[in-house]
Length: 387
Ligand SMILES: *Cc1c(COP(=O)(O)O)cnc(C)c1O
Image (cartoon, rainbow, N blue to C red; front, top):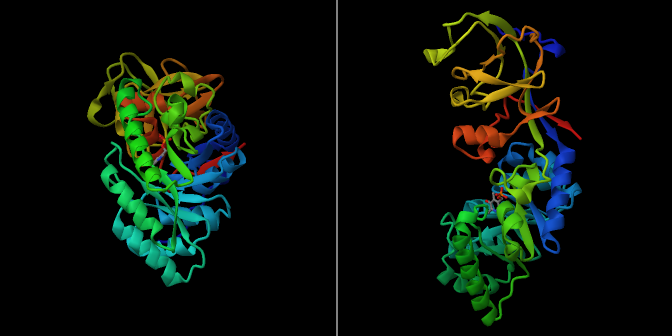
């Protein structure tokens, strides 16, 4: 019963994501030039936005990133221990307090703080593990994102609490912008930055001047030079994707990820016949329909076939028809008899000069490109690295 299935190397993978490490390097160089003299912190949370955390972080460092940003302590371990990278790593939110001992043990890792509990627990963790130098921490102020961060009124008190601990070093002060990529919200971004300036001034008046001040994400780096301070925290742009579609300042970025597969089956479907579950699509004429073995379990949303999604085969954009199924989808190739099983399919990326972007998917699906690249299943779609 339990016999392994013999899979010939030519038969797999059915679908894969190609990640161009040279593109990541290029993008970071592009961003570093715009950020200068501010440092670039490449954000590699979410397994490097789905690109592979260690490979993405290494390529970002090769391109000039001097810091790395992560969401989780385990991601800090990935970068520092498994990736053997020596750049400072900033954890962008307070970890669960019991994990602060791990942070205190890891060389080169610093955490964000915004509560008295975490500040005290971080100091205790440093004592408990016998760390012989202070743990750097970055105080985060919530100026309007309202996700995590200290209220501006609490910032001075928390900064003083950090400076009162011999075990801690207040290395950074930062905030996060909620809509920096959207010109329609420039007023809100200005309000957030003004609020942040007030906090900085209040700390300065009390003699507290954290050496690394930061606020910008990709959108702010590209659109709000006044937000650069000492460091910019770039995620999506590192991967060659603009934080919003058709952002002129993002021209020159190169998407690092392409999603590819091979046609598994080709047949003719008669006019009037439906394709896929629910009979949502009915062929208007006799059509060559190609089947591609990738579906919503792999990260291609079911709805993509119902909202005008396309793929490239032979350099031609061709519509996905009917609902995307769990591990297969169907493509209308019209009367093109030349399409064959094993032909390469590009779901996003380019082929013979034509291209489809993660933003094309996102706009059709009413979401953002971040969610598309992060959604390509890592247990199903192997990453193939090229340069
Ligand atoms: C994810 C994240 C970033 C990076 O944002 P992008 O829009 O991808 O550049 C920066 N800062 C914080 C706090 C984040 O959570």
